[in-house]
Length: 384
Ligand code: FAD
Ligand code: DHB
Image 1: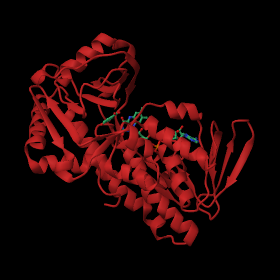
Image 2: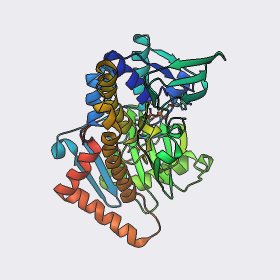
Image 3: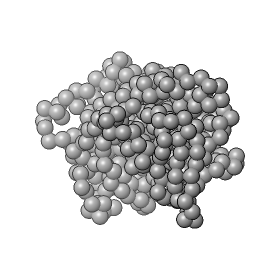
Image 4: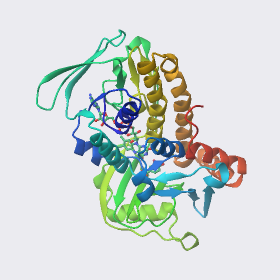
């Protein structure tokens, strides 16, 4: 269930391992392809895409980044991940990855049903679960399967199919949101700038040599209409340090804007009988540190070989340990995303602000502090 990045990547890896799958998606292909979301692929994601033969356009059109900049009023520091931990990251939009996955899906004739409704799961604790749904033409259908995988994001039926008395959820909401904008302007930086500012966090990211992506910390419940182009550029310039050491921010036409909530969420276990949960279906991280998409890909990297072993060779050990192994990484990334969020988003408490600035000085001034951030940001191995 789900033809986002985790669903399509999983079906690709299963096909390569000789396991047939059918993908169900509630939205249209065009809708899924156009959703503006993540922008940074960590080292292990890029390695997995390379091993799967899905990295040609990423290598040709993506940008390899050695690290990031951390900025706060009066100071800017570059952390070089390659020097610190020997790994880089790549700027490549989720929309582009989705296009590559769609192309690979079409090329191998993968069965995908878009715009399905009434998806319901049955018999998950037996040997032969089945899924019922209504297809785009209004026809009621039934699929019998060996396993069902919920790659259906935070709002799909996958996570709720684990009985309430067998699942545990953990949640943290944050007292701020992000305003995200896309702009048709060349990035004013080669590598991302994460900025702490008393007015709130700002991030300068990018999508291509002519498209820039920005985020601003805003209050929960912010109406995008309250952020005119002028106000948005003025605030980005102020928070990102326009004028610092001669650095300038170049504004341009804003083509997309939206407000994103910030939330940490984990549901365990990530398996119930013959149902497996992957990616946002089991966990959500706040976006600071760019872990959401990477974590979804990492889950797939563990689950695909486990399902091939189970279904092709009758070996259950990897599938049986999938939830426990995936959750080790999920909690590491949940902590990292919470930590980056906590370090960079200014609130009203003057004591907290001093702690944040002290943390930033340590992360940028100490080899151990810098390596800790770099190791987590550039990506940990699939198995922790
Ligand atoms: P999804 O991409 O959510 O895919 C799930 C799919 O399941 C969807 O296509 C959905 O339509 C489908 N589905 C839902 N219900 C059903 C159903 N009943 N039947 C069939 N299909 C169904 N991460 C970052 O790293 N950086 C970012 O900047 C960032 N920004 C984000 C902005 C937004 C608005 C959101 C929502 C997420 C953002 N993320 C970001 C997180 C990242 O995009 C996700 O972690 C990633 O998309 C997870 O992939 P997934 O395949 O698990 O889930
Ligand atoms: C992007 C989003 C993030 O949350 C992040 O930490 C880095 C980059 C982006 O959309 O480009």
